[in-house]
Length: 243
Image (cartoon, rainbow, N blue to C red):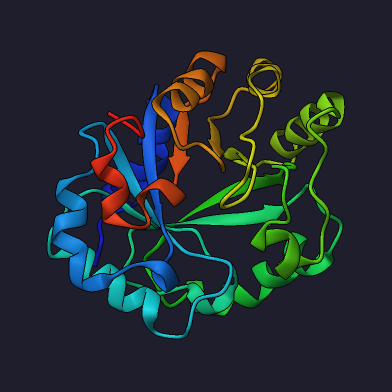
């Protein structure tokens, strides 16, 4: 059983972290046999691993986390596309509410379905406002949830949505351009949201280069989430991707 102290570790880290990096691993796209090699090549400032995807076959998430834990002590946080991806062997869970959309299933429906599963685990549950931002293509999140992303030109709407989420008690705000986005979230959006909220700001989607990652940090992102560039270990051979 995890101690109460351990259960608080992830959110405590996020509350103080600056220029942190999380690597998002989609079990459906990851070669589990290459886990050790993959982990050795991650940047040294990787703070934690996120595991999840829009659609993941049953059992694959648990198997991947078991394998990851053989080779790393970094916190492993679930980033679930739906309730079926909740497994007890992770350290925590981003309890996502898709506040950018108006589909009740992803605002509160999946969360209600998750309750009985979560009661049987010791996962640290972190309420997270999830804002899908237009990344220039149709993302998997958009397709699965049936919601439209927020326009990058609607800075006021994005800021107000993030602020309302903090007022509602969310502990994190996550600006997401979507896996494989052509365009990451713009710096002026990150800066505006950061100025408006007092909780940690996570930014992901479409961030593939060192310059894009640094731009997100400079604008105010506390934690940058990178996924696509790390789904295949061969991508790490290009040192322009990330240090």
